[in-house]
Length: 418
Image (cartoon, rainbow, N blue to C red; front, side, top):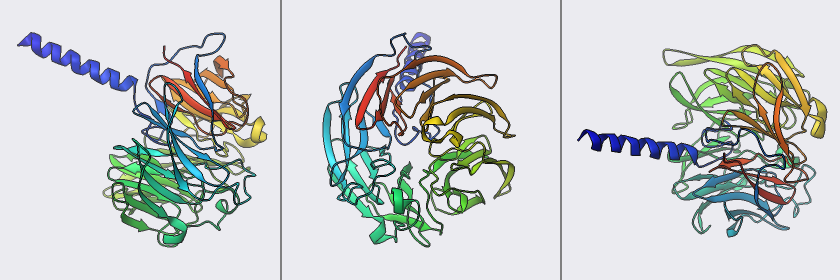
């Protein structure tokens, strides 16, 4: 009996370990919305760079990818529409394509911020939730791409297509799945934040009034309470995802385009906007049933991130500071609780950051991939490679030891398994 129990325990531990090693990347910035993965990865890359499994041409787009069940889901633009495309993770072969929006930036004569879509699909229970530049949301069957339900926020919910920055650059805020709900920002008065039943598409709740930004909401647990934190024009909104009720609010400055999501460690929330606006942090405390957010620090013109969302490790923020412009923006480490800059690293441009197996994976704005050791003491670069060249603004995705990222109209899968 003892031996049987021991075998079962060992098997269970092995299954859990395997699960941790090959976690799905279900939405923008991963399953927890924090840009982190605990999968094991290479501690350093070969001199010639990590192995590139495949490269393919895809339609335009700056959004990120979801990776679930060995499939990559990504939004692309054709000349006259926006689609969600499914690819095989190991080969890059296209499995299906499905139209999300019959409009495209090219069709409407837009595109000075790069081609849309800028959004990232979310995947849950065999369904894909894809949103478009023009605030459409489509629920698709993950197996074959067939439409299950669709909503048009401008027509149905007074969607804010005529508000900046969407008027000029289109929407970049992505959907988040919470339990049986898929939640997004984009409606008009009294319905800026909307939750749909993820299976039927029925509206479960729609509440509050604010001007939308391009920032994607981040899920968090603060003092044991699950919440969804939005960064809208009026500042931070923390909502109960089940009801849409406000848990707390905090006034925070935004820019003409605010794309970076808030990031959370413990009960401290970091927020930031580019174009010289700057960053700040608030501390959230719960007394009885009530939450209150109080300012810890703000730095006007500093700790400014344009659309690159930061990552936090052990009380330090690793960010891409907007000060150098699109291609001159530099890496920076900042103390979370004080806002004190610890170091400034090299220019990587308006790229993106992930934290994989405790290491920083940095995507430069021109396609470079960089591996660095996160430390508040100094910038410590470990490896560098250049699998792709071109405009690389969209966030990479990582699952089963494979990093998928895009530059201009090319997509690549890079193996980072140890």
